[in-house]
Each structure stands twice: as C-alpha cells, then as structure tokens.
Amino acid sequence: MRVRHADGRWSARPIWVVAIDGAAYVRSAFGHRSGWYRRVLAGAETKVQLDGVTVPVRLAPVDEPTLVQRVSGAYRAKYGLSWPGPVQTITGLEAAGTTMRLADAREVS
Image (cartoon, rainbow, N blue to C red; front, side, top):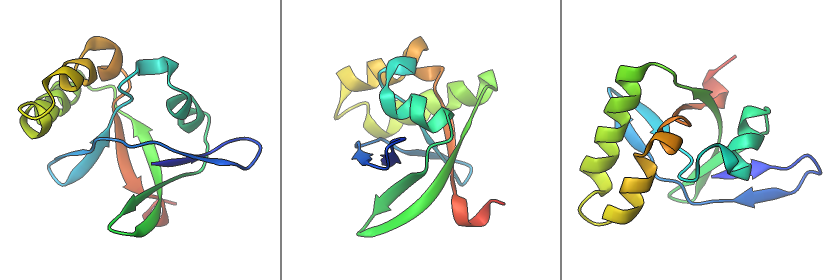
C-alpha cells in the first residue's frame, strides 16, 4: 500500500489483504500507532499495487464486531500456517480495532 504524506511524499508498506463475501479487508498489524493507518484515517490519498497495476483506493473503518471476527478468521485461514507469529499479532485486539474495508476509489463518489 502507498500512502501520501502531507508534504506530498509517498510511503509504501506491505499489507496483508483478506476477502470476505467479495470485499477486501486490511488491518494495521501495529494498531492505531501505525503512521500509515493514522494518515489513512486523516484522509490521505492511498493506492495499492497488484501485479504491476497501481489503483487508488479508499479505506473505510469497520466497527461491526461480527465482521471484525470474520476478518480475524480470514487472516488465520489465509496466513496462519505460514506466518503464525504475525497472524497472532494481526488478529489481536489492537490490530482488530483497525479493520478497514478496501474499495477502489474510482468506484466511490
């Protein structure tokens, strides 16, 4: 993910994405203290790159407890066997509180 800073610079961070019912979700593994997460909440321009294509995105916070739990389950299912330590972090309470739905910004008015 790429997030624009207030001074115009871009920073890039790898993120783990999971899908539920056709929607994509991301989290800040380091919770609310993560710089990219705070910039996104403040409305920073955000993009993701997949297979060499960069797409502007919008991230919307998710506060529905059942959906947050489903996202945790999706992280465990997708990454749990290969990355048990990081998955424990990204499914913990602090990270779960940063769950966001990822949407193509070109489709959102």
